[in-house]
Length: 192
Image (cartoon, rainbow, N blue to C red):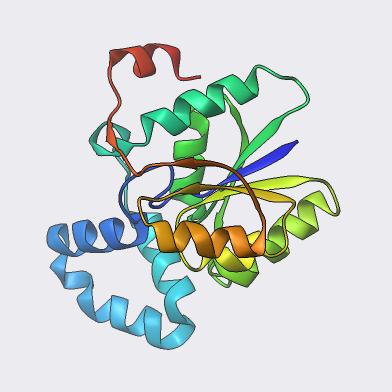
């Protein structure tokens, strides 16, 4: 089975696009005019891309869904399973986080032209995996568009009505509550 895992709100607690934007602006307020220009010229995808090229993600400061990581490590033990990180965050951020965990085969993120969320994320999944059985792991309303086109899903949410909405568009294999924590020494040592 192919598993495609969302990053923001699913694997980690925060939205890296928002985090990278505000942390970059706080450190380099002189970029505010450039941010306006990037958004004006190329929309959200270009703004996210340019900020992502500047921002250096510190994995030790992120809060991860440890229960989901344990589950992904179990899945990775089966050689028939392939696990990918697929996120609306920029490719540079996604690549760094995906390479941190050995269970991810590859990471796919937003580019300068494509904001990899919703229908764009589903298009990428179809492009790379065709008609293969894909289980998508997500947490947000925008993920409903992805689940509509995948074989099954895993939901990360504490919201009963959202879980019900996901069940209406795909077969839900599992539900994880949104509980996040910093990686402890066990995870840092093993990393999947």
